[in-house]
Image: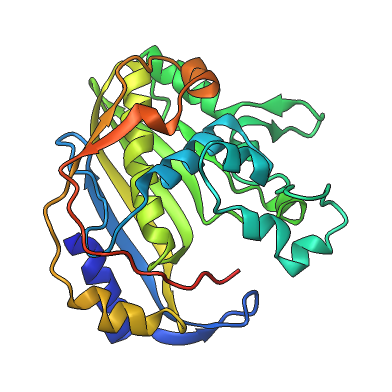
Length: 283
């Protein structure tokens, strides 16, 4: 919470106004932010200065890990964040590669599970990483990237948190996640949760102890229409103690994640929070 609030205050104090051409809304922006999450000691980075709906963030992560490419698939597992990008983004609606309602194209998990080689075959990045880590292998390239510059025109949104690098030191697993762009009031808490859960889950299914998750953000911003709520409401509230996350111990393989795992397999203990804040979402 202290890291999160410090970043929000830094953007307000030091940020510069940038016109965002994609959304048509100005952003107060800083470059470079580094956050750390203590997964080893289960300090779950759930925002306490407003109510956070953590299960939607976990549902989105599950969709990525399964390689979903359709907003209806995400809705079915409890995540509505892709409805607007799939169906209300004017550039995507006019894109000839769009297949119809709810189609997201080749974004996020599609790249992680079906990266297309020049010969047309697919490479499953996540499966390679999980298999290596399960066998105690760290080739210094245990990387899952959703960012494919050659296919950005084939999807509704370039991935924001785009690359995850796993590092194995003895029996302890670490994660470094890279994010090119971050809507701090709305998106960051989703991203924090997903970094934490991704490391915890992969450690669990590969038989390792989790260490820390390191989260690097390049462009961190607050949209102009979000600023009053952040400055005058959320930053006036006192943070509360962090909760703990519980993951069903029966989740033991990547196949489990692909087939039967739901958000019911995740719960938090000791979550206290202030009331929700309805930040505007900019498509």
